[in-house]
Image (cartoon, helix red, strand yellow):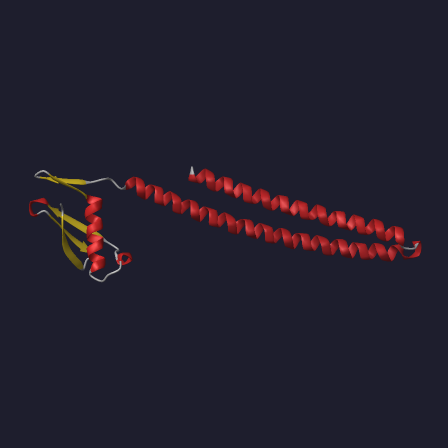
Length: 165
């Protein structure tokens, strides 16, 4: 689904770029034709060749402007496409991570606790000790139901204990 969304976004961006280039080209050609028609009617027949040369210069400049604008539109479309791809990849990773987390429960002598709750207790205790939660790179949890405790090691150098129940 994410792959289809990325493809669709790419196609839409490319279509918008092509449409913008076509519209700009048509507008430039219309201006050239309008200027040509007005200039030819208002100028004496002797000066008509000079006006034709000026019109060709204007037309060339307009075409160059259209090319530059088209290139800018294409560059912007590529930039937007890259952003869309990045966002799609991030969302896919989030969905995969969410789907991969199982719910784990510990039951012992009539008591029950959820691993997610135990993990939150560990993180809370770690923060209360003066650390930042964002500093946690690895977390190992050792459950010992007979002591009603969960022992942990954070980043291979900080350890502690929280109660299971």
